[in-house]
Length: 314
Image (tube, rainbow, N blue to C red; front, side, top):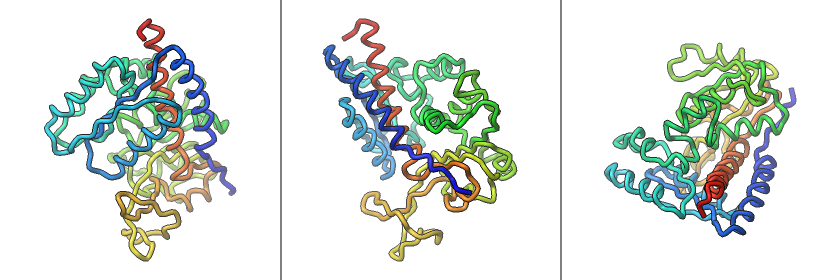
């Protein structure tokens, strides 16, 4: 079977062009849309993801404020950073990179975020509105998955969708979006996780499989039915040896990357080569969901700024 590649760059380009036009209009009204970000992680991959977010903002004319904290710092340092950005009238959107260090309670951060600036739907009020079908913001990655499927004319309505991963930022919001009685929803959704006893039996019955669990190559072709659509959200970095093999012994390093000078192999949660033999359509990693996620994030930032203009606050 020949699989269609669900490439993110063409979809992201259309979103960025739309966003750039909206940014120009806002700047013409004297408002510079600004995203404030907070990173409290020593993980090189998290640093790289944050750098990509700032580059995406710069690409469409958004301003940014960036706060980076020692991951061993006390929670109050993070609290102060979030409070400062939420209180700053020049900042229209706030994004906190997760996961947070173990000693920081994410519930405290959720409550501190200003809902009108909470572009990734962390605050309970925003999450509740999403579940109720009346979202102010749709988190960037779930929105990217829906936009990618729509862009490639992949029907969700009436189909069995299996999500592998139940995180608060991807799995749970995406499940709610796909369940809702909307053009992008009306699917029958199964959410799988570490407590699922037989993952393969669930994925084999799916019309669409979406993975976001952060486990390299957890799902392979033997776990998929013929004609399935596969959307792999994760980008997992694995160190590689001097011979070009991943440190766990698997695979050739065909597309090396680098994180803080260490050569890595970037793979998804899906073993691509075997999966594409079964799939009618599949996202590559990298180059699939990632570019669209960045585009949807900057789109949310502009939306936050436009709502401020609508409220008469410049």
